[in-house]
Image 1 (cartoon, rainbow, N blue to C red):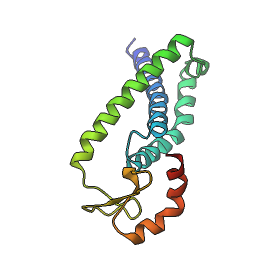
Image 2: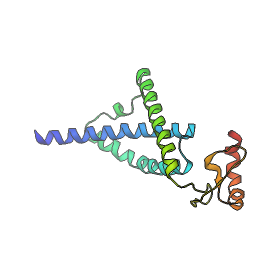
Image 3: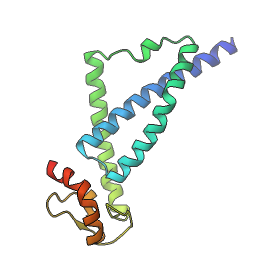
Image 4: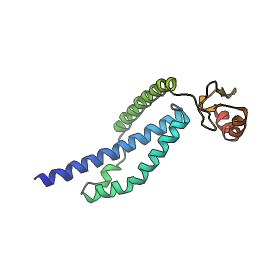
Length: 154
């Protein structure tokens, strides 16, 4: 009986991990759309999600080999589930925004181009985004080709 419990527990852990991955993916997408976190954080989180995404097929295959229905884990959400997930993601995004605001006061500001920690960074005068803060004129000029597209959206 003990041998039957371990695979069930492992299957539950895998299912929970896959569900958490999907929720994290949604929360990261929401944070990107609403620009709730600094660009450097989004880049770091995106890298971690890319690594997790590479592990996803093997986790799904392992779950399937354990006898769990793979269709169950990728079944489309019902309207109620979708609304609950959206509310959960918005709550997580709000918490992430609050954490970012609190951490922003604690972290040294960094140049949006070279990444050096600096005091008194200059922000883009047009959009005033914190990601568009530069330690020097040279960094601002070097970052302009990429930033001008983001700046126009603001």
